Image (cartoon, rainbow, N blue to C red):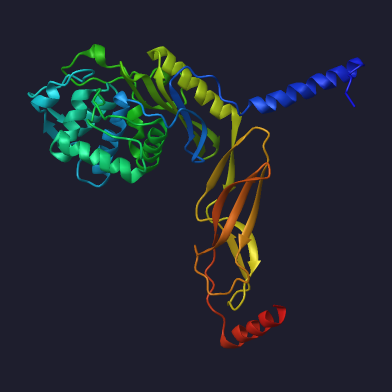
Length: 387
């Protein structure tokens, strides 16, 4: 039977129902983006929220410098380098074309300043200088870049230089860039503040070249990185990240990747649209907390008869507005001691709107040694009778 909203009250209810129905559908639909490819990555939940042409090969331009920085950060973290170490600048670095921090062979520049020159000013000269410092030569450093890309799982990436100038065989994808940025943020959070620096220039170099090209740093206080890039082949590219507090001590971080936009302004606007949409359209749900019990179950042949089950770390899920999350534990039965803390005994099944979305390891939170001989044998008999 067809519903006919005759009365004004029925008309109003019908209007509200239609409005709610379409708004609930539209929450999870990303905005229209004017770019060749884009991707929104939720670092907190380790999820892709939206993507378009994300597996399409593109020229990364200066987004290449993210891998260059990753390898420098790795050298710093492993104490092969120090931020205070100073190095002479090679003629090769000095003569680099494109964007520069304007260093020359008469200078001795610290690793700290070279990082700022590469990240804030997008200096090709700084990129080459850092490559030579880490690997001894640009060619050796490019080998390290490709080795690291494969280690991280960047299967559709090939590097030919450390700065991002156009070169045959130099390419990546939005998906691979998301992998790289995720590892950079989570592995080296101590160096992320470099990407939030708005202005920098090395003493004795042109002051006019000191402004970070990430326009969102100047517009959105939640944005604290990461990198922009441009070549004629690549178009205008940007990877922006923003962090917003959810509760005390917990912040949610998103990454927006925009590749092949039409202008510097366009890439900033499109990245901003994606970040705003990601924060608005999805809620971050805490699935587990480190060490917090999710289930308490019966244990056989142990000194203790119950075992707490949970997770060794916190897990989060980004859920579109209006979606319902449910969790169900599955574990081995019967659970027979001994158990060590952290031992996997099953899995937690996470469903969104009754569709299985994720499986998490379910672990023992307690250590339970074997019981004495009498109790073990008594439990053996009980298990035999109940089988």
